[in-house]
Length: 158
Image (cartoon, rainbow, N blue to C red; front, side, top):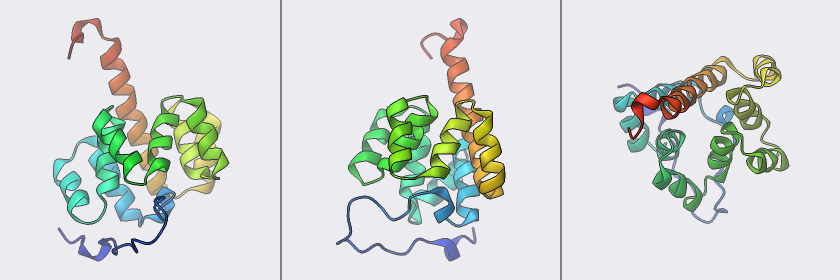
């Protein structure tokens, strides 16, 4: 793939543990779209993200799918904003407050939209780029599928 142009630059290790990438708008739109495809389950793109400096996005894909190890990794490796976003998308009020406190409006509205808030979808349409909107819809679809599987008595134990 010709994604080498978008390879993340090495970060200065003397910076705070909270990473510089705070909102999806800080990533190039092609990276956000790649993240969206990885969330859908595209293993080739998931692997590409991992190997090309976007490990946090690959791990976030697993965290979205309720993997506890991935959730722990995000916190231990300086990506609390991603974990707060994922928790907020699951309706966690303290995660929503955390995103608000740190003025992460894009993640806040993405999470609220994923959790069914129509006003946040309108906010995203007005204030976010199409790639962020696509990512939001993708995560919402995956979260809905997970929730449906958990409610389906025929798939109990899967």
